[in-house]
Length: 212
Image 1 (tube, helix red, strand yellow):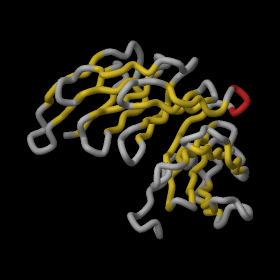
Image 2: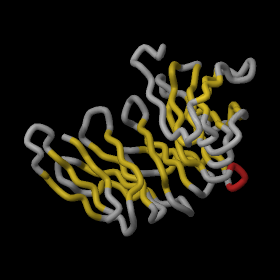
Image 3: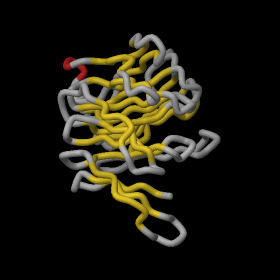
Image 4: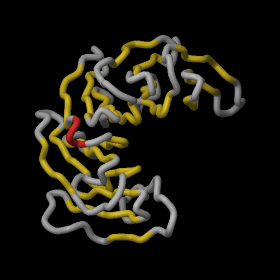
Protein backbone atom coordinates (compact mmCIF):
# COMPACT_ATOMS: atom_id res chain seq x y z
CA UNK A 1 0.00 0.00 0.00
CA UNK A 2 0.96 3.63 -0.46
CA UNK A 3 -0.59 6.63 1.30
CA UNK A 4 -0.76 10.09 -0.27
CA UNK A 5 -1.46 13.42 1.46
CA UNK A 6 -3.39 16.23 -0.19
CA UNK A 7 -4.08 19.93 0.02
CA UNK A 8 -7.76 19.06 0.38
CA UNK A 9 -7.11 17.74 3.91
CA UNK A 10 -7.45 14.06 3.07
CA UNK A 11 -5.20 11.03 2.94
CA UNK A 12 -5.74 8.39 0.28
CA UNK A 13 -4.69 4.77 0.56
CA UNK A 14 -3.75 3.01 -2.67
CA UNK A 15 -3.00 -0.56 -3.71
CA UNK A 16 0.44 -0.45 -5.32
CA UNK A 17 0.02 -3.32 -7.78
CA UNK A 18 -3.34 -2.33 -9.21
CA UNK A 19 -3.36 1.42 -8.53
CA UNK A 20 -6.80 0.99 -6.94
CA UNK A 21 -7.85 3.55 -4.35
CA UNK A 22 -8.74 1.59 -1.22
CA UNK A 23 -10.05 4.36 1.02
CA UNK A 24 -10.08 8.08 1.75
CA UNK A 25 -9.18 9.24 5.27
CA UNK A 26 -11.00 12.40 6.30
CA UNK A 27 -10.67 14.53 9.42
CA UNK A 28 -8.24 17.39 8.91
CA UNK A 29 -9.78 20.79 8.25
CA UNK A 30 -6.84 22.17 6.26
CA UNK A 31 -4.11 20.93 3.93
CA UNK A 32 -1.88 18.04 4.98
CA UNK A 33 1.82 18.83 4.57
CA UNK A 34 3.24 15.41 5.39
CA UNK A 35 2.42 11.79 6.07
CA UNK A 36 4.41 8.69 6.97
CA UNK A 37 3.76 5.09 8.00
CA UNK A 38 4.78 3.01 10.97
CA UNK A 39 7.33 0.35 10.09
CA UNK A 40 4.72 -2.43 10.33
CA UNK A 41 2.51 -0.64 7.81
CA UNK A 42 -0.60 -0.65 9.99
CA UNK A 43 -0.79 3.04 10.88
CA UNK A 44 -0.29 6.39 9.15
CA UNK A 45 0.76 9.70 10.71
CA UNK A 46 -0.41 12.96 9.13
CA UNK A 47 0.75 16.55 9.81
CA UNK A 48 -1.56 19.41 8.88
CA UNK A 49 -1.90 23.16 8.60
CA UNK A 50 -4.88 22.86 10.98
CA UNK A 51 -2.25 22.70 13.81
CA UNK A 52 -2.85 19.02 14.49
CA UNK A 53 -1.37 15.66 13.64
CA UNK A 54 -3.35 12.43 13.47
CA UNK A 55 -2.69 8.73 13.87
CA UNK A 56 -4.77 6.58 11.50
CA UNK A 57 -5.63 2.89 11.40
CA UNK A 58 -5.00 1.90 7.78
CA UNK A 59 -7.18 -1.20 7.98
CA UNK A 60 -10.32 0.68 9.00
CA UNK A 61 -9.48 4.17 7.77
CA UNK A 62 -10.45 5.57 11.17
CA UNK A 63 -8.40 8.07 13.20
CA UNK A 64 -6.97 6.48 16.33
CA UNK A 65 -5.79 9.78 17.87
CA UNK A 66 -5.93 13.50 17.16
CA UNK A 67 -2.65 14.96 18.42
CA UNK A 68 -3.64 18.40 19.73
CA UNK A 69 -1.22 20.85 21.32
CA UNK A 70 0.73 22.68 18.64
CA UNK A 71 -0.17 26.35 18.26
CA UNK A 72 0.77 26.65 14.59
CA UNK A 73 1.11 24.62 11.41
CA UNK A 74 2.46 21.09 11.86
CA UNK A 75 4.95 20.52 9.06
CA UNK A 76 6.50 17.12 9.65
CA UNK A 77 6.49 13.94 11.67
CA UNK A 78 8.67 10.90 12.26
CA UNK A 79 8.13 7.56 13.98
CA UNK A 80 10.51 5.85 16.41
CA UNK A 81 12.15 2.62 15.21
CA UNK A 82 10.02 0.54 17.59
CA UNK A 83 6.75 2.22 16.47
CA UNK A 84 5.92 3.39 20.01
CA UNK A 85 6.39 7.15 19.59
CA UNK A 86 5.89 9.84 16.99
CA UNK A 87 7.58 13.26 16.96
CA UNK A 88 5.97 16.25 15.23
CA UNK A 89 7.63 19.50 14.10
CA UNK A 90 5.73 22.79 14.02
CA UNK A 91 6.00 26.44 13.10
CA UNK A 92 5.30 27.18 16.78
CA UNK A 93 8.98 26.41 17.49
CA UNK A 94 8.43 23.06 19.17
CA UNK A 95 8.78 19.38 18.60
CA UNK A 96 6.24 17.29 20.45
CA UNK A 97 6.80 13.66 21.40
CA UNK A 98 3.65 11.54 21.46
CA UNK A 99 2.87 8.02 22.64
CA UNK A 100 1.32 6.24 19.66
CA UNK A 101 -0.73 3.80 21.75
CA UNK A 102 -2.47 6.45 23.89
CA UNK A 103 -2.04 9.66 21.88
CA UNK A 104 -0.62 11.37 24.98
CA UNK A 105 2.03 14.08 24.66
CA UNK A 106 5.18 12.90 26.45
CA UNK A 107 7.51 15.89 25.92
CA UNK A 108 7.41 19.38 24.45
CA UNK A 109 10.86 20.24 23.06
CA UNK A 110 12.02 23.72 22.13
CA UNK A 111 9.87 26.84 22.24
CA UNK A 112 9.17 30.12 20.48
CA UNK A 113 12.85 31.18 20.70
CA UNK A 114 13.82 28.23 18.49
CA UNK A 115 11.91 29.65 15.55
CA UNK A 116 9.69 27.59 13.27
CA UNK A 117 10.85 23.97 13.19
CA UNK A 118 10.39 22.40 9.78
CA UNK A 119 11.90 18.93 10.12
CA UNK A 120 12.69 16.25 12.69
CA UNK A 121 14.45 12.89 12.64
CA UNK A 122 14.85 10.17 15.26
CA UNK A 123 18.24 8.45 15.65
CA UNK A 124 18.54 4.89 14.40
CA UNK A 125 18.69 3.55 17.97
CA UNK A 126 15.66 5.62 19.03
CA UNK A 127 17.48 7.48 21.82
CA UNK A 128 17.69 11.00 20.37
CA UNK A 129 15.75 13.28 18.07
CA UNK A 130 17.05 16.11 15.89
CA UNK A 131 15.04 19.14 14.83
CA UNK A 132 15.77 21.99 12.43
CA UNK A 133 14.00 24.88 10.78
CA UNK A 134 13.93 28.47 9.63
CA UNK A 135 16.78 29.82 11.76
CA UNK A 136 19.32 27.36 10.36
CA UNK A 137 20.44 25.65 13.55
CA UNK A 138 20.04 21.96 14.31
CA UNK A 139 19.01 20.85 17.78
CA UNK A 140 19.43 17.40 19.31
CA UNK A 141 17.39 16.22 22.30
CA UNK A 142 17.38 13.09 24.45
CA UNK A 143 14.13 11.41 23.45
CA UNK A 144 13.47 9.77 26.82
CA UNK A 145 14.16 12.78 29.07
CA UNK A 146 13.51 15.73 26.75
CA UNK A 147 16.90 17.26 27.60
CA UNK A 148 18.49 19.49 24.96
CA UNK A 149 21.89 17.94 24.25
CA UNK A 150 23.38 19.90 21.35
CA UNK A 151 22.82 23.01 19.27
CA UNK A 152 24.59 22.85 15.91
CA UNK A 153 25.23 26.14 14.09
CA UNK A 154 26.68 26.60 10.62
CA UNK A 155 23.93 27.00 8.06
CA UNK A 156 23.15 30.59 7.10
CA UNK A 157 19.50 29.97 6.21
CA UNK A 158 16.66 27.56 6.94
CA UNK A 159 17.16 23.79 7.04
CA UNK A 160 14.74 21.80 4.89
CA UNK A 161 15.98 18.29 5.62
CA UNK A 162 17.79 16.44 8.41
CA UNK A 163 18.65 12.72 8.55
CA UNK A 164 20.79 10.46 10.72
CA UNK A 165 23.67 8.73 8.90
CA UNK A 166 24.39 6.71 12.04
CA UNK A 167 23.77 7.13 15.77
CA UNK A 168 26.71 9.56 15.88
CA UNK A 169 26.33 11.47 12.61
CA UNK A 170 23.73 13.75 11.03
CA UNK A 171 23.37 15.22 7.56
CA UNK A 172 21.38 18.37 6.84
CA UNK A 173 20.28 20.25 3.71
CA UNK A 174 19.57 23.97 3.70
CA UNK A 175 18.16 26.68 1.47
CA UNK A 176 21.63 28.27 1.82
CA UNK A 177 22.49 25.78 -0.99
CA UNK A 178 24.72 23.59 1.18
CA UNK A 179 24.52 20.23 2.86
CA UNK A 180 26.49 19.57 6.05
CA UNK A 181 27.62 16.44 7.87
CA UNK A 182 27.73 16.71 11.66
CA UNK A 183 29.56 14.64 14.26
CA UNK A 184 27.54 13.81 17.39
CA UNK A 185 28.73 14.51 20.05
CA UNK A 186 29.93 17.75 18.52
CA UNK A 187 33.71 17.83 18.82
CA UNK A 188 34.36 20.29 15.97
CA UNK A 189 32.48 22.26 13.29
CA UNK A 190 30.58 20.29 10.71
CA UNK A 191 32.59 18.56 8.03
CA UNK A 192 32.46 18.37 5.15
CA UNK A 193 30.39 21.29 3.85
CA UNK A 194 29.04 20.35 0.43
CA UNK A 195 28.05 23.20 -1.92
CA UNK A 196 25.08 21.93 -3.90
CA UNK A 197 24.48 24.71 -6.42
CA UNK A 198 22.77 28.06 -6.53
CA UNK A 199 19.23 26.97 -5.81
CA UNK A 200 17.63 25.95 -2.53
CA UNK A 201 18.57 22.50 -1.24
CA UNK A 202 15.42 20.87 0.07
CA UNK A 203 16.20 17.20 0.57
CA UNK A 204 19.03 14.70 0.93
CA UNK A 205 19.06 10.91 0.71
CA UNK A 206 21.47 8.52 2.43
CA UNK A 207 22.52 5.05 1.33
CA UNK A 208 21.66 2.14 3.62
CA UNK A 209 25.22 1.87 4.92
CA UNK A 210 25.49 5.65 5.48
CA UNK A 211 28.49 6.16 3.19
CA UNK A 212 26.78 7.93 0.28
